Picture (cartoon, rainbow, N blue to C red):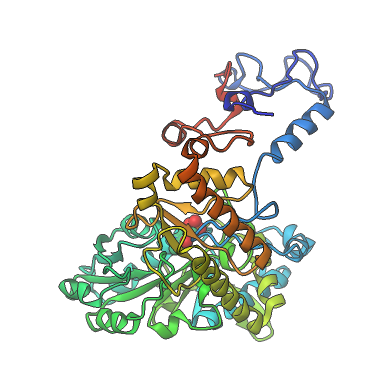
Length: 491
Ligand SMILES: *Cc1c(COP(=O)(O)O)cnc(C)c1O
């Protein structure tokens, strides 16, 4: 059945006068309610009117139109859509975590404090850092927090003129945005023709206005920056700091550590590398870890051990303050902690090894089918380009993406990073079987063949999904986010 987008927006079966709910009789005598007139509804709320079973069917049907990693292969580059072990759900649901009130005193919250403290310890071990905070709710939030730490460190040194922050042109879009929001002047560093950072490109900026550099390593091209030691020496030599965007830790966990590469501040996307469910913008956690010299600036409160107890330390005069309302996204933190313990050190290392192996297997299988601008070997992900395909057949990266959707596979990240034309960025993760990788390769080959033999068919895909091609520009510029937007809105 094909349903056009506008049919999805109303509660289709609504029949006035046939609601599936009944409010209890009001127990406030008529005329006694003290809601001011200005706050009262002028017209009745437009609630859908459906029986209970129709409501259940409505939502169950809608849920089946979604796509998730539990439904199929999801090689969305830079997003690490690995399997989320269901064990994580059991621990996150434990009453001691899920029913705890954030205002409960330390004495009554020892379990969650210990979990937080030990999670930070584990993350420090994995990254080679000295301490950290679990407060940030996402990678971008971690970056922003890290940039605030940079500023606090420069302020403490009396070097507030350090405002220039270097960001390579292959970086994730959140990097320059976070740095800018935190008050830095962002300087984009062009990559070399091999996709790598060229250390000599930093030379013009190595002065006393340099704040530092923000890097993800391996980069979003899936390439390990082999000059990282030289880059770190240059930045530190000029008095700057290095920030590691650890969203791509899935390639290096257990193999190398950002702390050893010379980074001063790191964030980790727990919702990527540490197997907690994410998508559609949340939920997440972006803990930030720092070297010794930045510890005094961490957000309050800091988890500290006091004998055999844990407490939240608020007495940190140089702290940048709080960066979230409470103490972090606890449900996500418990899931990540569970993953870390159940994998163990060797398991985490093996996860990275297999993530890299899987990516290289796909790259080797596809590089003669599509153009591979950086032939590899790669780390956890790689990019292909549909540029020549588009020039010869009219089939663009977007058409390949839609063809994958038609085949029950989530598309890779497309048109990013911006430095590769018609880019498709593919990250299979370690949790896929060889069968699912081979199936992906088969489908990619079929689509490539279709581009030559029947491009029009590819332009028309997907055919069998609830929604076909949407107007992407309109979807971004004027999104309709609520059922209430359609029809009569009460106000
Ligand atoms: C996903 C990602 C981010 C942003 O993380 P969010 O949790 O989405 O804010 C930053 N950098 C890289 C390299 C990423 O892959």
